[in-house]
Length: 344
Image (cartoon, rainbow, N blue to C red; front, side, top):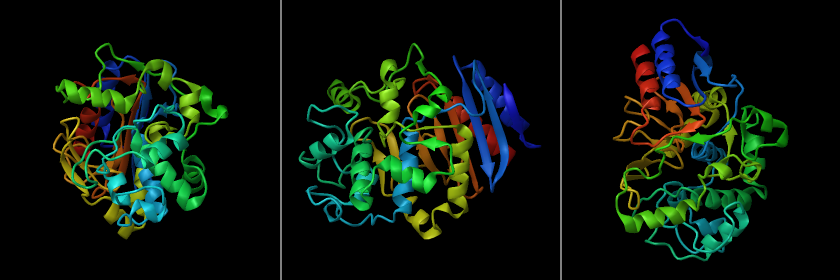
């Protein structure tokens, strides 16, 4: 294990040592408060402070920030920006209530444009806004197309313009491939761990389309495709700094207040998991995903990643790992956030 913690944050280092012992691979944890690094820890074979990790759905929080900075009106119908899209508001896309959790057409999951076109012609499973269910991949296709319609540019290009000062890459360039950690899955890894219904399990299979297979998530094609739901790479240090900057005004306070208000909440209609969403951000939930605090926002990622902010404490944090573990038995992120809370 390498890295440092600020005086008084030694319990975070101890918790990280336990996390590394429970991880078959590498991991990193970073905490930044008002620009000050409170913890920056990493470890595992070949890991350095600059190791990039596929963020999976941690990408959604990055894209939520881009959407907020673009000032796309959440109350407007999607068709205001994307005339071919028949129903629903921008807020329904960002709060996972649009009713398009999977793509029916047989198109490559790497093709943002083809998936967006397919979704525009697809009938929602429910009236937008009436149910909430996590849109694991389609959130990205829908946001990517909205960004393109508003700016005329790809989501990756816009993210680089707005967030270029952070070591976060939506569309990882070849020059950074050597820094990307190789991902593995624990022997018991599985998705949608709250779900027992076989019918809805088939829906989940349609949602993911093999996206989390090792040969896919470690491929160059996956990292290059600018998949706004789960394909970005970043370091823990960069993600913690991003959320710290968001708290410090990167996103104007009124815009952030709107984006981090509750826009949907309840039991996921497909996954049976308790969820609570702002505009693209996950919010503190009954599972304690964001630690023992009442107010938090960010976005977790498949396999254990936790990236977010505690606005009252004015800090950002990020946990990255190369070993994906199942949500119902993976306590690594919670252990770190509990230790952090105890130091404040």
